[in-house]
Length: 303
Image 1 (cartoon, helix red, strand yellow):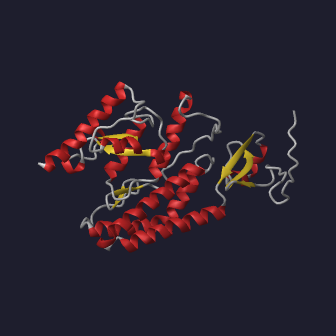
Image 2: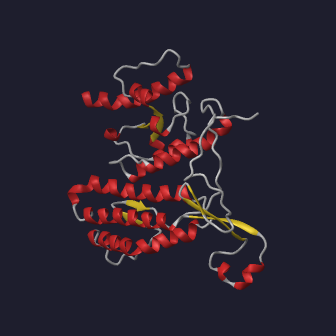
């Protein structure tokens, strides 16, 4: 059965290329076929010509590498500018989270390329001078001038900077688009991984590092499901609730956090105990326990 859509092919985007002779740039990734076991440097040697086996090499184009380096250096400059100013703490946190988001995004997108590790190391070396300057200024402000530069464990304003070079290659997988995440349990793990990536890229500004880390851990432990109803929640649908309120001495520890929906979060903090009619007894009991813990602090304050 043939499906004829009568579509016209774009002359600019449609090409037939011999990957043994030319490179193909597709979705920001450069693809080329080389002799197996041979890097670009090894291929220049004469003895490499005798190799018959072929291997597809994928890489980040040079133009993209330069753009990535420029972007990272620009964000570091913004952090350097804000770091000495104690009044702009919120803005500084935003820039640090932006830096981590950019690095994590590059790792996630380009880790399917075969040359990801050497390229990321190259990018790190180009940004190393500015990172060292950032480390020196942070140590100076914290009065720790003897603190040695450690690219693996570098903290600014209490937030760990993700090392640029710290990434591993992963084989790409096709994503299924026709799924029902309320019913298909076999695909739930892949869904959770995808939503965890979103949570990691979008931390709650103004909250502690412990809170953001435990928020992700709690979502993973609950397999993305609502604590009360057990319904799967996307990253943008979740609310992270403190079992014991912060005002009552509750901390951002893993044991004091649960993941629930926006509606259930409102029910927990409601003045009177209310529950939807479709709730089972198990759901009602869970909601009642959380509601009682939440309202205990309000009652004590009113006294």
